[in-house]
Amino acid sequence: MQETYYPRASDHTTPNRARALELALQAAAAGYSVCPVRGKRPRTPHGYKDASRDRARITAMFNAAPDATGYAIATGSSSGVAVIDVDGPEAHAEAQRLGLQSGYVVKTGRTEGDGWHLYLSIPAGVELRSRNFASGLELKAEGSYVVGPGSLHPSGTTYCVVKDGEPSPTPEWILEPEPVATPREAADCGPGTADLAGPPILEGERNLQLTRIAGRLHDGTRDLSQLAVDLMAVNDARCTPSLEKGEVSRIAASIYRREPCKAVPKVTPAVLAAIGDLEAIASERPKRGMGGSSGWSIYMAGLEAARQYGAEHPDGVELSLDLRTWAQMAGTHAATVSRFIRRSALVRRLQRGSGRQSGTVLFIVRGGIGAYLQHSSTGGGYKENVPPPGSVATRPLLRTLYRLRWGPGRIGKSRAALLTAVVECPGVSRFELARRLGRKPESLKKPLKWLVNNGLAVRVGWGRYDVPEDFVERVEDARELGREPEADRLQIARHDRERDGYRSRHKIKAEPVPTHEEMQQRREKAPDRRREAIKAAVARLLHERPEYRTRRAGQITCALVNYLPPDFPQGTEGFPKDVEVEELLEGVAA
Image (cartoon, rainbow, N blue to C red; front, side):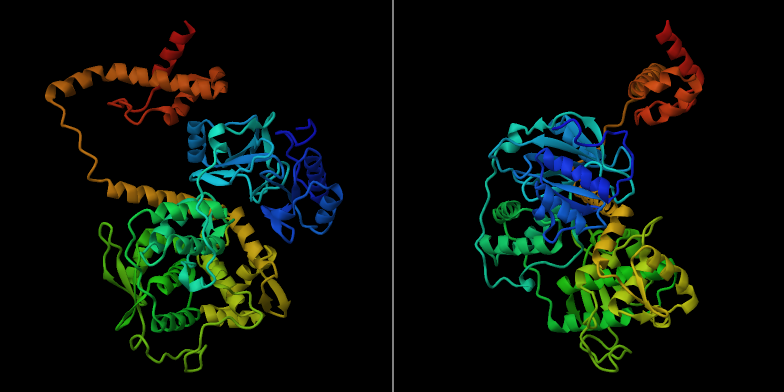
């Protein structure tokens, strides 16, 4: 690697297109294939596959991408490097456990806990597959890319070098090939044969979620080849970015060796017709305040799940779904979903969940399933819920809008409902939007101005609005800026811990009740244990934060709270006092 290759960790200059081009040309001169990116998305017709080391071609790609904010490095044999993408503290701890380290490290986020890129050199002639080691810990090699240091992060900071040495050699255990099952191509595999619905599957969760989907698809009606083909269809439709075909085949082969699960009943045309009517009616129901917007998001996400698993019921559409999965699809919390079901007149709980059995709810259809529904969008008859001509509305896009989360700096569910109405009716007026949302036209001035200023909507006439051509990319950039993918990953990880904790509740045995003598001995030893705990906490604090060696005892005492063990004996004195810390420091000085 050349000395002048990447900016140092102290270089916080916001890059422009000219600076990004300069860094990309330096990377190409060092032997890496590069292409322009905006945020994290390549700005070339074929994405990272257009990456090149040719100076003239790189310059032409940047000239065709005036909005580029950085450059991407194609990993694998084209550049001779693989990158360990470490996303979050848990992934960092797992990387340390596996012994993954590098002489060249790039910081990718806004805080120390966000993420790092560990660069590894690949031997010549070796093709290394991209794959996941754990949640948030991914190897990017063949068929992948990373954003290069010096580029602008969607959060507004810069990818920055924190360890400026040579990339370390790839460990031997990573270079070892894995068995891959090659599926046959099935010409009759259509969209209805695979589970293509549901929220997007993000990086760090692709392997786990595809394994779960494969378990549901393995119902005894498919052979290994068909299972692999159907799973690849899910991979292409929902994974962002898609996993390598070999990795998907390996997941399918692993699941196929297990006992098949119970087949999911096929959704009937009557159920799909009822869901289409319910969606059309819901699009014109009032969405006032946070409660109304959250309820709209939960209801639409539930109807989306019913498209896969809904069943006929005399009073409507029946759906069996656990609250955690429903909350993930709606971008909210399980408690919020439960409260919505309890209070809403549109949904009725039929059966509560217990153990491994999901709860069952009923989406109420007036007059029962198959009834003749009237609403303003159909003029008194059934009309298939199809977006109007020229609309960019698609099911994946609408699912993304339904699950936008509340939070500072985020689009939020109120503006998501407003955006959904604009997407479904291009060129719609503010007065029509107010009618569809059940709000006053004056109340939409501020949110529409926010959407226009943030590039998510454009004015196409006096009081009329539409979405830009690259609307999908802009929504994804806004989600990255609002750290929504990270929130999704944390929520999924928390739900997995809760499920595992419930399933293993009977394996945890209570500790025996201590005798009177044991309790007396523990009380007598409490002062010594308290002193040792404070001493260990002070030592750890001074080791991790050396600047505290010159600070007063009171400042050290305040910082000790984060370094005390969970079983710290507080007694009647509570947390450590200044006097105790001063005595320890005097002992160290002596």
